[in-house]
Image (cartoon, rainbow, N blue to C red; front, side, top):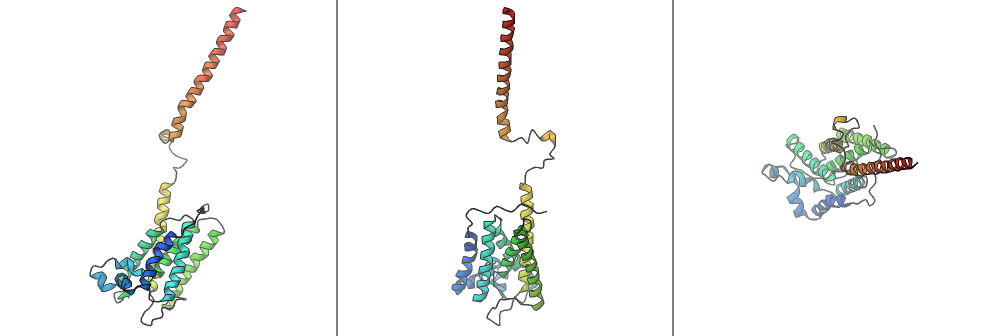
Amino acid sequence: MATSAAQLNTGPSARWAVLILAPALVAYLLPGVAAAMIYDRPAILAGELWRLVTGHWVHFSASHLLCDVVVIGITAWLMESRGYRYFPALCFLSALSISLVMLVSLPDMTYYGGLSGIAMAGVVYLALHGSREVQPWRGVCLGLLLLSVGKLAFDASIGDFAMIDVEDDSVRPVPLSHLTGAVSGVAVYLWSAMNRSRRSPASSNADPCTAEAQMPPDRHAAVPEMADGEVAVEGALVNKLTTLYLVSRKG
């Protein structure tokens, strides 16, 4: 069932987009940094486990970097402006998941780089959140989900990435990274939905025997004021009755 639209933040910020994308730009401009970050299977198996995460921030072409920067930048901005949480956790968990899946499933692949798998995770996560809101944002996000599924199917069928040129014949695309990223986006969304349900207020069908225990502090604080008011009313009533009695006695 559709939920009400998330409130837009009064001042949407791109801070997460900057923090996520800055290392990718640094790695592209400084080959020495990229060499220390890239997914390198022999190095990972030798104990350099940070490469499982940092390898995604290394790109082999300007076009691939530009595509990832645009997609992740827009996705991060939309998440922040609409109040969707856990984007940093999504990036970390999807990066780790993609690398682990490739480490197990693609033993012949020595090197890997690119944020496109994380970008796919972000798009799916954003679209799933928006699909529970009201129109027109809901329709946009449902269309985005369909587009993502279509792209995954198309990439898998051709064994390549649509609209991305890696500019190097020795570099081959890995559609499995996009698929794993999409699954990661679904998993993080379900986890966030569970957390949201735990934080939701108690049902109105709560046990009446526990209603007093669940009474908010302000209601307890208001009880003495109500009691004082009742005493004042009763005092005024007694005074009035006493006056009437004395008048009747004099009469």
